Image 1: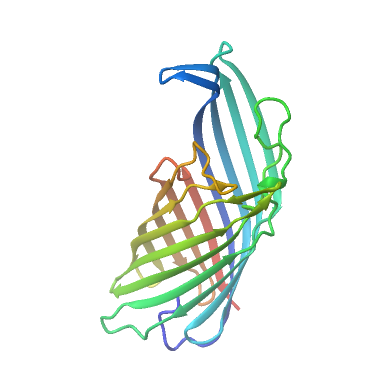
Image 2 (image 1 turned 90 degrees about the vertical axis):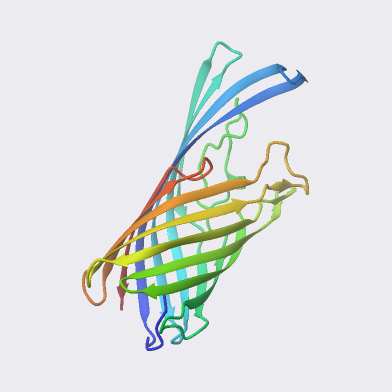
Length: 289
């Protein structure tokens, strides 16, 4: 972050190697319901396991003492394993595996330190992030023609939507700790896909935590992030099974400064809600040119 009025212009790069693992189970009924407890049709249990890893490069430039700009270019590898059990057909199980790799969605961010801060006052930082559609879209991926419908033969490397996210970060130094809080709003811009207008839903997010300095080189951090994602709409209508998602994660981070220009950051996020990824591990190596 900025949090200093004596920072001269600089160029900084970040090498990132994040890994995300998540799993979920979905019960689906193909057919129709005669009563609340009686269904005619096929009852299927679908279990998903997703693994995503990417190597990302972030370029940061200090425009002024208070304004920074970031450009992030990710390269993604994604894998999904799907097991489908048909409970109305003697529990017959099918397995589907798919992968995908390539350029992800490029992001551009700006960070502006609003106030001078310090001397017992918090720092306020305004952020704006814009996410592109440079990665492959899930709507352009081929699907298995045989049962079950809708399972992708190839995994996308992007979300398929533009996204704009303004946010506000508050930092309060209290030696040897720094407390932080963040609120954000993510606007996912809908568009026509396969002849139908799709709006993926927007998200309100917040987070808080603290970083603690152990010595002049090492520090640890603890925090929590939560996002509330509204239900998507297809053709202006919310699908019957679509619901608002609660995505929350506990955060643990470690940082170590190697020298004046290079440091190592390791961050772990553990899912606290059913919709959150089980584990997200990120290794970052920032260095200043």
